[in-house]
Image (tube, one colour):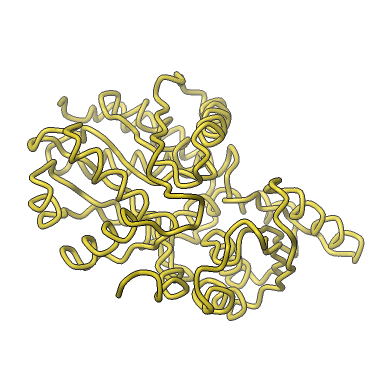
Length: 344
C-alpha cells in the first residue's frame, strides 16, 4: 500500500478551506488502534476513527455535517432549526444540541411506525430524553416512507407563525453535509500518514448516505488505493447506494474534484431484519467492542457497521498485514433505549 501523498493532502485542504465551518465539532477526532479486537479476529490491523468524540451533545458524525450545513442557516438569519427522524434518532439529538448551542428554536418531526419499539424505555430514554433536555419541540408524525416531507411541512408551519426556519434534511445528508465528510477523509489520511501507512479500507455504517458520500469523495482525492466500504444499516442497499451517488457527485461539484461511481461500495446483509432491529451479529459486535476495547457502540448504526466489518474480516477480505479504519459514527445514548434486548 502506497504512503499518503502530501501534495494531495495539501490540495484537498485548500479546497476545503473555501467552506467556512460554524465550529460546533471538536476536530480533528482521534484515530486509535484496536489491538485486542484485531488479535481476536486474527487480523487485519484495526483502527477506529472516533467520530463519537466530536463533543457537543454527546457527539457523533452529524456534528461534522452540521458544521458545514448550518453556516447557511446563520447567513440566512434563521431563528429555528427544523429536522426529523425516528424516536431514537442520533441526527435529531445532534440537531437539537446544535440549536441549543446557537440559541435557536428547534422543531423535530418524530417518526412513529418505522421502528417497532423494542423496549418500554425506547420512547422516553436515550436520545429521546436528550432531545427534551436540549429544549427541542417534538412533533409526533406517522412514518410514510418519505424522509423529508413531514420536515418540510413543519417548516411551512413555522413560517406561517412568523419564524425564519432552516430545514436540516433527514440525516443531515445533502451536498454540504457530504463536504463535511470529505474533511473526515482528509483527517484519516493525514493521521495515517503520520503513522506511516495508508489504510486498505475505511469501513462504516451507511444509511442516509451523506457520510459515505463525503468519505468516498475525500478518499478518491487523497487515498486512491483505499476502499470506502459502507455497511447498509437500513436494509435498503439499493436506495442507500443511490443516495450516496447523488450526494457524492454534488459534493465533488462543490469542491471541483473528480469522482467516479466505481468508488462507491455498499455492502448488504448486515442490517438484520429491518432498520433499527437488533439481531445476533449486532449484539456480538457491540459486546466485542465493549469487552475488548471499552468502545461503546449503538445497536442501530455503529454496531451494525462493525458487524459488517467483522463478517468481511472473517470472510478473508483483508490480510493480517492490512490496516483497516472503522469510522465510529457515535450514537451511544441509544444504547440505553435498547438495554433489555442486548443480553447485558
